[in-house]
Amino acid sequence: MILASAFLNQIVSPQFEVKPVYLIYGEEPLFLRDCSDALRQKLVQYGYIGSDVYEVDAGFDWRALQMETASGSLFSEQRYLQLNMPKGNPGKEGSDFICSWGEYETGPVPETVLIVQCERLDSKQLKAKWVAAIEAKGLVVQAKPVPIAALPKWCQDRGASLGLQLDSEAAALLAQRTEGNLLAADQELQKIALLSPPSGQISVDFVAQTVVDQAHYQLFALAGSVLNGQLNESLQILQRLRQEGIEAAIILWLLSKELRQLVELTQLCRQIALPQAFKQCRIWSSRQGEYRAAVGRGDLGHWQKLLGSALQADLRIKGIQPILHDQEIWSTLDDLVVAMAS
Image (cartoon, rainbow, N blue to C red; front, top):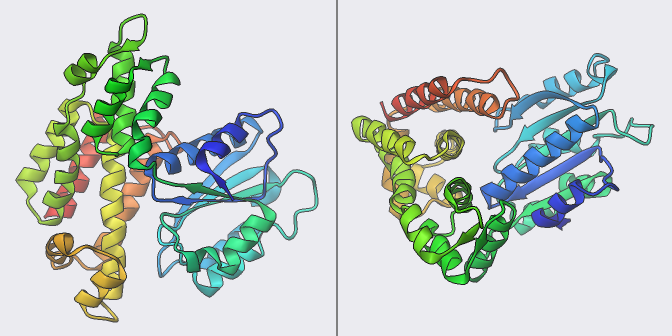
């Protein structure tokens, strides 16, 4: 197991070797995104062709995936496929599938690469057979959050990769205004890079004038507004975020995260009471009212359908499927917000 930072360094190394299977997991969405994107780009450079991306939920058909990946057409050329499994619970069929992955590979370079991406995995999940199998045959990458005390240094290092030199006060202010949200901090750094002086020297005054902390609060206000069914307010917040220059990909990540949570909640509510489901999903009491309102508006099929729509939009934003124009991307986000909040 290695950390995301070490994995990103490994990918750019001339000695990088392709493994048959990767697990990328953790609580930091920026590192999850960076590692997945870097790995896919590297595989493409090595001649691999992107295959399908699968969203794994409680009803996922592992048998169908087994049949598809065992077919000769998939192995006719080098490919990679990705399993998005946010909760890290593949079940017995999924565990068997992952454990058996790559057992028929005979050459030094795998013909098909499996990328498994999860969010937080607890100690029990990390001891599961499927995780051990990935570690034995491939690589496990952990996307750990940056400790609060280390955020200013992280901002300086990330800025340096963009040709910026943030002094200590500037880095501290950026960390404070983005409140540890690395996706937001990364976007602000990219904006600073566009506006920075030729020297690349960034002072605290420059950050104070450039970075507006309201954008961060509006981003998470959107989640609460959508869950509460406040349609007009949700659309207004979405419009303000666009005007602030927040990337569509960040907003889509936020909405997809809420949809995954709603899918899990509505599935659990078929078996246990909602308060128990809140506890099992680790939803804080301060947010239970929002989720209660959303669960009351839509059933499992509704949230699964919207999650599928969000996935398709994500693939297009990342260029894996035919790319949408900017206006089409924002129209898609509008539609998604309307469907979630209505």
